[in-house]
Length: 88
Length: 132
Image (cartoon, rainbow over the protein chains, first blue to last red):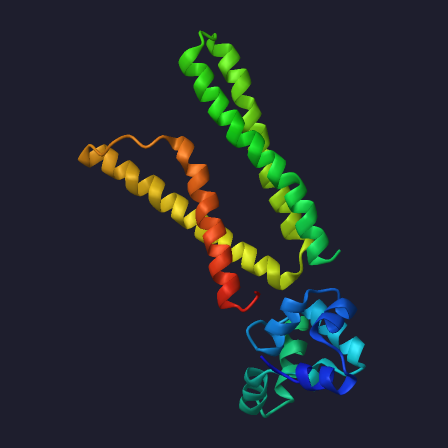
């Protein structure tokens, strides 16, 4: 998954090890996320977003989510689906 | 807990346990071949390497829980490779023994096959992923 981790980290002058310490993972894990070899779990993504004081979607960019939202341009479809699911 | 601490805790159990397993297995074999020991005593003695190996697996289980999610994924992948190698050798050689009169392979060797393939897979995956 594309992400701005490296840029954000560089802006703050943090090494991979330091960021890893802040979010309680190894330097190797931060390196793998930055290199887009590994997508973090939701709890780790939340930890990272808290450390940078940004929203998750401001750090991580999932192309597939963008494509899906483009396909389902009629956003009103989702609430109606939820309403019908709840009523059933 | 840091990866270094988890690794230290793992090897603190792994190294003595694997030594007990190795010496226990060799000692048991030598004893069985050279000394007239009643079968019940051999069963009892065989518990030494068995318990040691259980300690190794327990340490590995704890290690996998203590490292972070990415390193855990590498361990899981390596374990899958280890299990795959183990099952391929076991069922493949078993078929050869059954149908082609291949020489008997002691099931004792399954554990070393698992650990060797698991260790090789860990090293290979870690290298490929740029862990070291």
